[in-house]
Image 1 (cartoon, rainbow over the protein chains, first blue to last red):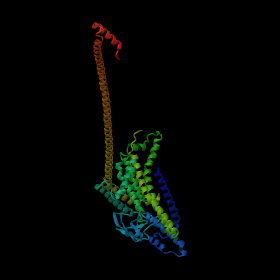
Image 2: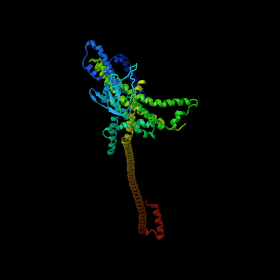
Image 3: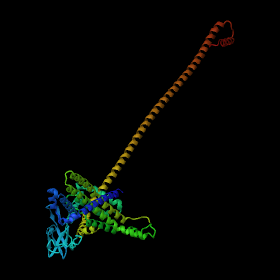
Length: 381
Length: 166
């Protein structure tokens, strides 16, 4: 019940965040279009360090807003290089399936300033996405429709992007962390080092999430999934709190993958009783049974869908709200207001730390609940 | 929704699924199973230790209780023995007293009887002595007055009856 309330509370904040961002985005859209498409961070630095003359102030404010929006968009989106701050970062490999396998460094795309020619095919980067270039000239490489959307074809893209890189790093980190803890038990059953902190959480997942929702009889085979998903989401959420500009769990492809796995595991482990409750609900008048079946069938897909959207929206909204408030420090740029926004950022960061754990908990909890419903056996009926 | 679909990256989805499934399998083998087994093992050993401690405590309590019972029994035994001894002493003393009294009574009675009989004998002796003496005296006195001895004896016993020595 309490979890439910917390979720609602968070959803409320997420909604607020979305409203805030959408409204500001709409308000800035006009100025943004007039502004150069490829607005870059160098300009942020430039605008920040040099206070423009009084008559130019209005102009520069629009600039700052556009730049902030650009920065937020860039932060939220995946990227082909690991960009930490100006001049610091490293390129990542681009892997394309387009007339055969093509692997090259993202430096060739030069942040969208150049067209990359690989084995006779040309590619161009635009808004953190790779398109097939129409020509080798950067100015004519892209084709736009009336709504200023790119109409170029996209190649099949399996690049090691920033998010993929982070997933790999996190997977390796988790492997060493948890296998290290596992090894420490060989010498003593007493938890040591990281185990002291993480073991209670592992036991919590087992005793408070898995066993109550799945049941003593079946919980064991789901523990690996539940523990992995919990720590994966939690650690990546926390990684998103660092200033490295990581937003893995706020990406729809990630949450879709996690939700899809949960969905598949649920359906595969579904017992007779589970399917019975979906297609021929017992204890309901026969007339209602087909209607119930339709509702249950919709529910079957809504459940993982809600998992996907909840995690995605919460993490995305958290990032958007935080970055917008940080952005406001630069928009006002006054010595009185900036500390106030700094304090607000700090408070919201603490909230986001809580949310990072909470979302991991909710995802794991609901996954366990769905597994539990799949393996549940009804003695009566 | 349009933005969601537009944002969806097949490549990222592919890598995420691949890495995550691998991660689950690897962690299951190298982390979760050993950790959960160790935790289980420890929980069981703790439970076992707690049960053993509980059992020891119970045994201790029962031992203490039996000790107490033995002590109590011993105390009671002592009390009983002491009481018995006291009773015996009392009864012996009483009996001794009784017996002494009875003995004394008997002795006194016997003494009294002896005294009585001695007294009676003495009186009879005295009477006889006195009678003999009297007769002799009377004989001598009355020798002259009475002629026969029979008359004299008759007269003397008549006189003795009249006298009636106390």
